[in-house]
Amino acid sequence: VTDRQREIVAAARAIIETDGVEALTMSRLGAAVGMRAPSLYKHFPDKASVEAALAAQALEDLAQAFARADDASFAGLARAYRAWAHAHPRLHRFVNARPLPRDRLPAGLEQRTAAPLIAAAGGDRDLARAAWAAIAGLVDLELNGRLPPDADVDAAYAAAVRALTLASD
Amino acid sequence: VTDRQREIVAAARAIIETDGVEALTMSRLGAAVGMRAPSLYKHFPDKASVEAALAAQALEDLAQAFARADDASFAGLARAYRAWAHAHPRLHRFVNARPLPRDRLPAGLEQRTAAPLIAAAGGDRDLARAAWAAIAGLVDLELNGRLPPDADVDAAYAAAVRALTLASD
DNA sequence: ACCTGAACACCGTTCAAGT
DNA sequence: ACCTGAACACCGTTCAAGT
Image (cartoon, protein in one colour):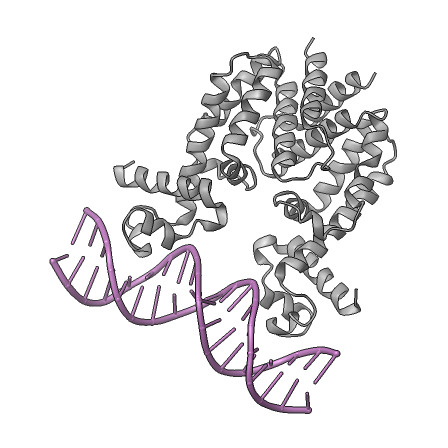
């Protein structure tokens, strides 16, 4: 991983966070790091590789947000995930709305990200997956504006956390 | 809604279901209904309108799958949703992975789709939203290949259903 | 009213050429 | 080794012209 590659991925992240996924073009990305689009291909084989590198970075970021959660219960982890997603809504959508190129991600990254949830589930991996789905699903509904305008979003999170907690006892 | 519009939406659906979202181009869509791409603009103002019409149709389809579920518990609804998503994986991704154009969808459609879940939740709308998130989230993880290869997917669904059921009593 | 070919401003990507 | 301009095959969309 060269400095130039890191610089390019950082620029890609900035573009997505400020203007959304559709604003990430090779031409704009090149301009952001001071070169023309074709030159990017000297550093990455294609656009998908840049995206995979960025997805890995975002997942890493999320894993740290999980690890730094003030409390490691379902409630605390849901709060941490939700806070991260609200801080980086376009990045969250970018990472979540596409089939992840698993083979291009660092090994063990997803496991590491999920570890705190497995702990909160008392080691029950199935419940941990259900919890991941519920929390990510709520964030998705919220961020994509798919909850009715009058929905009490906090209460929906609370209901999910309550159900998960009941199941973990 | 003209016959030609219905025909175009049906063709768009067929293209997505067989070859995925990225295969839906105006040129290919035109060819599927026997005209050139520019002619499509006599029937729809733009590509986004075709997509909105298709999203509405898919949601309608899903609502019916819910309504036809053999049993109206969380378990039965989860089974129905999962079966529909497996039968139309690319359509599910198409509908789920984008911010829905709510203002272009028929009024009440989403409410109607969600109604069986609210009933299963004993009228608790917050729990119903948590349930929707959990089920849609699991389908998403499954369809996007984001569960570890050794994950017991059935058990993850069962864990979610159990948690939701515990919370509804 | 409906469909066409030609054109426009964009994409991602390749490649020969420059330093 | 790194960057460039020119080119290619695509996009979605507009528009004047045909029937």
